[in-house]
Image (cartoon, rainbow, N blue to C red):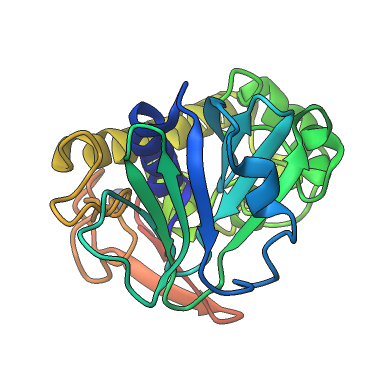
Length: 271
Ligand SMILES: [Zn+2]
């Protein structure tokens, strides 16, 4: 399942193909993914020039000179392909630039989504209107966490997964960041001191940045040989490493399951 680093890697892979280019053709090959494609998607995108690409939480953003932003989410199994050799049954949206470069949005399970939003209203459109700060942005730091966590009794892991506080963090990187910061996942949020929250904010940025860098270095220009963008396996610290040694202290990594979600942590050094 694509997490924030995969989405960032995807956007970086799309940028050189799309930025500044005009779309010569736009083809939807079925009516919907998780929800219907916008009716006028083809009409609004064909002939438009791509002015820039970005990311917000786990959404990719493709801005056009017509004041629209194409917002895509990769769901469980979505990926973009660059110049695919053939268009298959899971390629649901195909864009072609004036230069003849072809991009397809492939999504076998179809939990992804594609929307068109007026660019100047992006921040006040759901889901963006309710989102907290970007974990890699300057606004996310120990001071911000101190402010938002004051008086909260919820476990720190649940708070980091709350998209209204910090947007785009998933289970994998929350487990790894808590391990790097040596904070127990069940620790009551409001009782973590400022020094440890500084360390936690830094740890979140470190694990995400490392995953993005790993994605960029294992894929040449972010594109795999089959043209697929953005998927890579990371060397996680504790996630998926039950029974293996903790990278901090060498003690054994444990797994706990609550409400169907796994938490990986080190009981020896995470307090
Ligand atoms: Zn440890």
